[in-house]
Image (cartoon, rainbow, N blue to C red; front, side):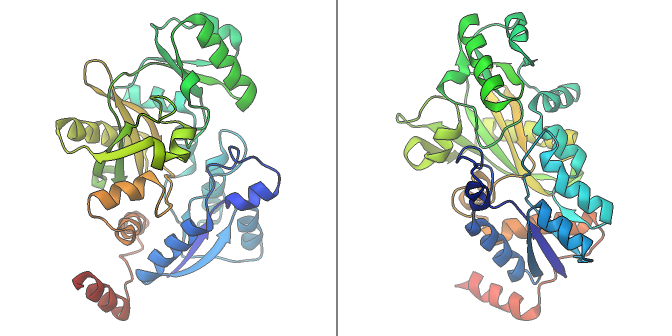
Length: 344
């Protein structure tokens, strides 16, 4: 089975003049190499395709794949993560991870919270600020938390995100509106533990791998899991498995949100406890980072004893099953090698 790989390489965007922050969500060669190696170990043939322009060019030239492993983030607009799966849908080519509708909904954190709240999933009260006048009209108790409505990797989240009065709120919203050219999401600040839950599977068959608590070291920039803390996680953050009742409760909330949003195959859901100890949905990552060393989902997997290869295998199993493409095509020689490796 031939699997195409679609992705955005960070180096390509840096070469085009984008900043480190602008390109923060994009992938490194190490991520592509790790995914490709894991797929090949499961018996798949692989072909690197790259970003949306390369995909469009290949499709126009008649190229096709049995399945596409898509981690392309896109560049502009609320629909940027939807562009590659939408094009694949047009050509009738199945792909790994969520469809364009789910990716579009999940990128806009305000729309996401409307959906999960309507499904009864606990999430903090919020407002979407489209302009400065909206900021003055926010009627929520302080402290509040402000971040861009459609960024990932902690972009736009930092020490100034937690605001304690209207003056700080307006300033934080003005910064988001000007710097990121998009609305600001304003939420009731959640004062409890922060966890990220890894999930594999789709619909009723989705399951939580585990819950990873994000612990802020004394060197952390703030008590927000933002861009700086994520980029310098070795010095500023600690990660521990939450295997207690809180971790199990967080996993239930995360799975409810995952299913409500129609997410598929694998990803992460972030939750944070409120003052009453209830895990609240923060946001979902249906295209979670897959760097084999630095990304939260692989880190969580290692802590529960799941290898990177197993993670990719479970993601592929879900994608193959829901597309009616059978099971993992592990060739005998590979299977024997893997068994031998496991026995060492």
